[in-house]
Length: 130
Ligand code: 9YT
Image (cartoon, rainbow, N blue to C red; front, side):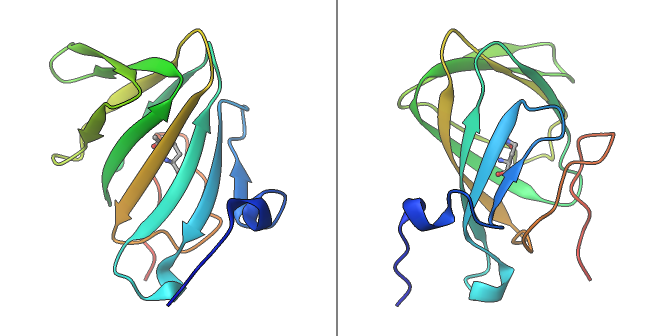
């Protein structure tokens, strides 16, 4: 059994900051944990915009605090995000993620799992490991 406290992740090498400061990702389960997915807490800073296009991963995201919105760049649809909203990028959906009036706290699951310290590249993509 794996039991982890977010307090031990904060400030460690498993806490990754976006290069432009829009988000903080606390990686609670990673590829090496052999669960078949990775599990992160992500804070999206209020008032920010991030372009994301995970071409190599599927991601499900559940909002537990704060607010923001997601813009589907294929359809132009904009969906509000707040406590209780889940979105799943089941089609590797190209999107913009916006922080709202306060920081958003998101629980994120990635398949295949993130290895550890990946950053988005200039196209909002995480590379596929191996
Ligand atoms: C919701 C989202 O995709 N935010 C970007 C960071 C990512 N969730 C991560 O690495 O945890």
